Length: 165
Image (cartoon, rainbow, N blue to C red; front, side, top):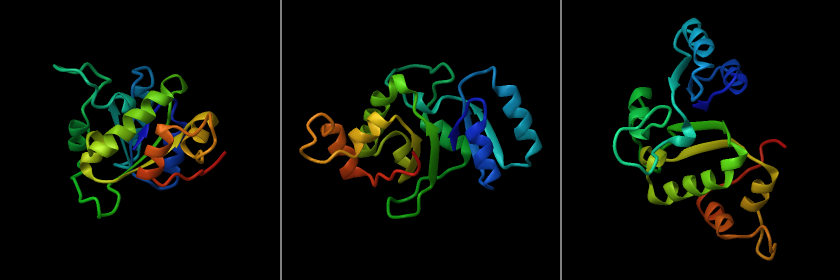
């Protein structure tokens, strides 16, 4: 599962042999990705949507690319699993820097509420984020500027690993 764009991350995941669902929020990129989808015999599914706008706190009909996670999971054919089961979904994405901190708060609240993407079980997030936010998430007590409530919530709820810098 990968938020899309020009397709660099999507192509990397496909080349690794993974089945990918690419959410694309920019209609200009859809034709290229749909063409790629048609040539890959089921390895790629392209959906017009925005992972970072899943389950917005609004009522009424959502205007794409915003979408509800239950509709997304239904479209992908992913069924809920118990928290003790294997991870039903792995997310690969790049957090937009201007919304980075807000998105980290949104994900951690959803985790503790078992809402949004976490209604289907544990989810593995593989996210590119700024070094500044990584230092906040991995700070130790006593690191005055970096150690915050966001730090504690992420460290208690998740195993945070640096995969690449």
